[in-house]
Image 1 (cartoon, rainbow, N blue to C red):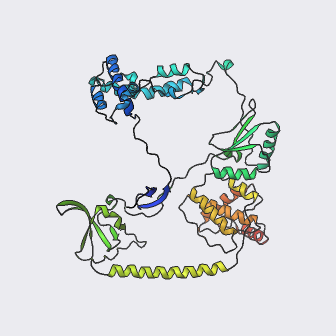
Image 2: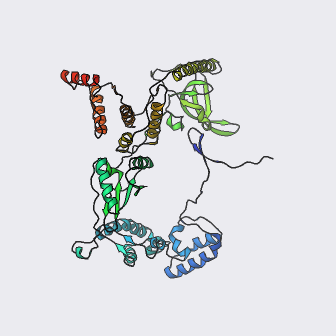
Image 3: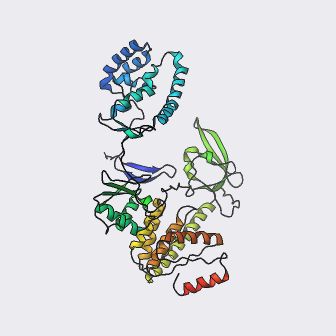
Length: 499
């Protein structure tokens, strides 16, 4: 008898394919209250005592607990009674914890907004007589202020109490506007005054790039991952906090949200419309008619009805939906329907397979020939390259980082580069081009960027010029927006190697 070792994997639901293995998985109950059998003997006496104090009938809850039920709807309303303790927020804080609260007026407003709906909902159901008193269900503002006032609390000083306020004396860090020489001078000044200097970055990649830039400046700078709206200098504690956004005078990184990336199998029969062309992996192209219920072996089955050439029909159980794909054509023309029982579809698949193998062989031969040819081998990243990348005003996506790394590997390889970068609008292709062009310029090469329209030429010119402005790189543009005289001047500068 074979033994099987359980394996946990992450799967793509629609494709039904394993994506990655999982070493460990934690399975948690989907409830706030976990009823433990060892404590069942304590639960019922607590409920009886609550009934006597509040007059609320809790018979149903007691009966269910005595039967050993582990999950009860609405059990959260008697949570404090079951555990015999007030399980409020402050239970989880240490006695010496320092609390910070916003201005009292704002806090009062938020409490009214939060507590009001709970009070109205309670009053609407109170007539049933099965609810605990409101103060057993939610905490009101009186309870919150009582807990806050019993602890050490930090809050903004109200108007008129400035004399009693504690002044920290912190200030904003010096603005360097991406000038690394100015930043180096400021780091040196803080270091001489024995400040603990911390530079916070939003991503690991940004942190690594800045560490390379600062490697020769000071050994006393600490790098960390954190998101702050702004840094500060705190003389009393000798602490200076800087973040990457302030260093390069840019706004906080904006996140790009992924769009629908590629065609996928049909995930639901609801995604198909009557009359859509579909492709069955075994029977070829047909037309979807709709959903039909059939009785087979005295059992009802929901099936997808697909018509083929002539009067042929195929009924596909909904559980075999993965056998269908939506038909797509770049020309938009209606396809010819296959005939069930014929071998035309199989012959088409065989011919397609042969053509694919033939094309694959030609590609292999072509790439083998290209590999044997010598190409321009660029050097590794320079300090200026790292500075350019660190000044990127957005957070790179995982796909963008992978593409950038692969492009660099191609450029540093001794073989000819052969790469096409594809992506939708806003996916960061221009930044890939900027970094590749800058890498070539650092190796004393000239770069030409060809675009299909005048507007795009102007947009790319502005982007390249802005990104490379801090470096000794001249960027020009030749388009219809330039005069004939300007065209000639740029062409001459390119010829002389000045662009």
